[in-house]
Length: 555
Image (tube, rainbow, N blue to C red; front, side):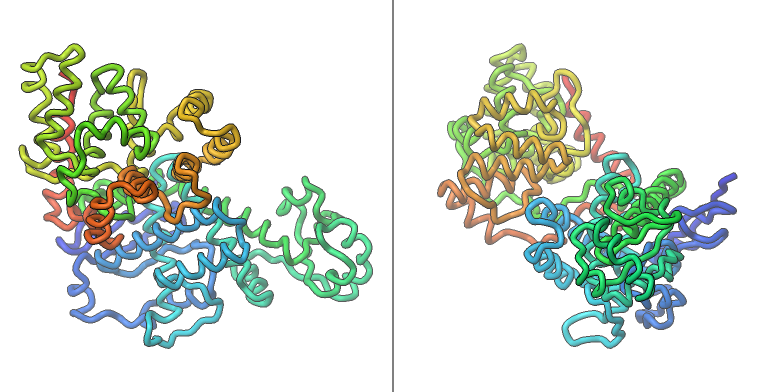
């Protein structure tokens, strides 16, 4: 039976659940061992950071790659917790975008991914080097960051099936890239360290099986057989290769060329990670009982790591008369869909008003313009002016931070639109690429004059669950450009990039360029609630959301 022991050592230290006689929160912690996170650092380290060598887990980082079987057991500061999580999320987002834009492991793919590794200080060199360079952390410190950040995101991305599926796919692609960069000797060492006892066959055996290896292995000739290693693996560990007849099978063993051993390792990694996420998901109630961890982890699952569009530098630059025209030229499909529904029905339900209202605020509509826009449209339907003022005007002022808690609410990012508040019957909000039936989406794209070949490309991306990339492809097709020079993460980003391409909105372009914040600011803002007093942090966050939602409910 699974038991947990959750308590606080002080206001500054979080003790995660200790599990008895069961796999752990992270999927591999030994019984009765705990993982602690210090929120100040000073209490634990007397104002100084511990040397990495003092960590008993240093032996984990002796190899460039790991299966993440053992969770971190050290104390880390909340600042480090946030930084590690956000940086790994950026890395996984980059992997997702590159995986669709380029052939995986191609020269362009590898070059761009290596640059991201360097920028975010993740390990990309197979050699261990504990010397601190002048330009950044040592290789061992990077490996520590890789280890801890994986487990933080494992907590955040185990919560739903969609999150788990996305996380596993990106982590597998990341693992593939790093494994393929290992020298042959280190690949063999990695297999042995992880109890994957796949030994290479000797020269004599290779010669005796030469013809069979050449005939059964893909892209292998007599010359390449002599130049590369072959692994002798139990056939049940290589069912995918056996099924596709890519390997030689004899006496219950398959002979796998060096180039294909990654398939076996990836299958093992995927299986282990999938099981670990399932175990972690079972333990979430215990983690969520900690009021300081819950806001952090919930935010990470929907985290947006791009520019902050809550700062209105372009207030009043968009006129109400322009909105119809802009919706056809520069609105992403989700907002174009909402605008069209509003014009046709003279009403939007709660989710639609939230999503579209904050988007319009982000592109520059002032409070006065927003009140005029919504009032003029609603009174054309079943809502008279008096009812609008009583039931809806306050909610719009509240959204602009003029009522209630006076909070400056941020336009929804793509991740939030895709993963939260799925539309039901009668709703028009959400992401069309995620929530619309493929046939309905196809009809909509045809209506908007997207070419048949373009529609096929978009639907293929949707089928692969690459919804943001499908939207980016829609951008490229509707703006007649070959390759967008940005990674799409936000509806307001779509609008600004569209205005740049079309040559309009020069003021918008200038203002947004000068006011653009670093990527960390957008995410750190989401973590603010976790820094507040433990008793009030999650309560304030919940009350804030409920407060705004209640004002937007249908009358």
